[in-house]
Image 1 (cartoon, rainbow, N blue to C red):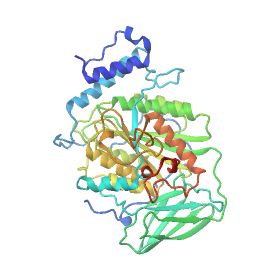
Image 2: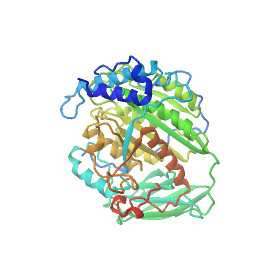
Image 3: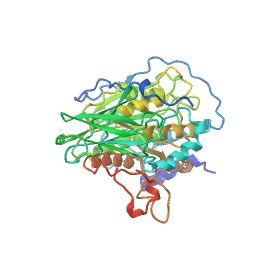
Length: 482
């Protein structure tokens, strides 16, 4: 009797090529306290506008040593040994398929007709359905290990004199004797979550395009919009610069997702080649302290073909106990990669099937990284792979919602069906009300890039989920452009 892993692998191969049945390929059975605005770093790291050359080597070891793994009981939140074994078997199946010509070569070369490692995924948008998200957070509050204050959402909107969004515009918030910084996203908006117990009003100051504007933030009004109009005409490059960094768990159970990321990089190059985009991609892989290399960095590059070849060396191995050192991977991506200071959009895509080691105290926690990412206008999109537990889901959805991004999940019996709230406004209409959008992972990520580009020229005051969740509206009233 076939195992589930064997059937999945065989089905994938049959779909990939019609003559596969004739080939002799077998798939063997496989609270901490609220964040204080003044207590977190908001200083930008050094950035450069020039592309770094494609990495000549596979990547750089940023681990700074191996350290010793901390053993945790697997329990209900643990990943079974069989889960990791299944990941190894999936990876072996991929390699067999590659040797049979079903998948492209491991060199990452571009070839006509290459087969993608497609992974189906769904998505939650917790800002478009903010009230549902707050209910979910309140139900899981006892499990929240890093409390990100999000219960008093505000929108900062910066436009030029014609009402066009001003992306990548620094905004300083002052009040109560302290100040902190934000940077507007491609939409010209930034999210703000002040305590209602703070002063009744805060002062927002935006400075870009040679102009400065001031406005008062009403702390008490729910979903309040503070609009700052700069009396200038915005100037953006014809080719819109965008930086995308993948933060990837490469431990033993992640073989299928690693192949999906490689395919996604190829898809980005193929599908966006004719668009007016100056796109760079970087990547940070991470494992755990018990592994010889904990993190490895592939610097940003605009030569996507060369970058694809450089990341072809990525394989799934290592790990140990269930949690991994995701927090080090996150802070490495934020601090070690050279994000461009003039990019109109900055996106981090975190893909993992295990939660972070929250007991590692001598590193920046994920709440700190999310706060600093928002301060630099970097959205953290998250992808929960199959097997992600409740803690991992909480961590991922927190980071995405706080930075204005979305949370995706692999539709393979993983995190998706266990989640509530959120959802794409359009696809949740109709007879099958699933509350989430779905598609292949590469297409979802490419759609994120295109939505960011569309938002640059969209009405910045058209805000999904403001005052009412999108899924609570009639279908013809929902806002689908982010």
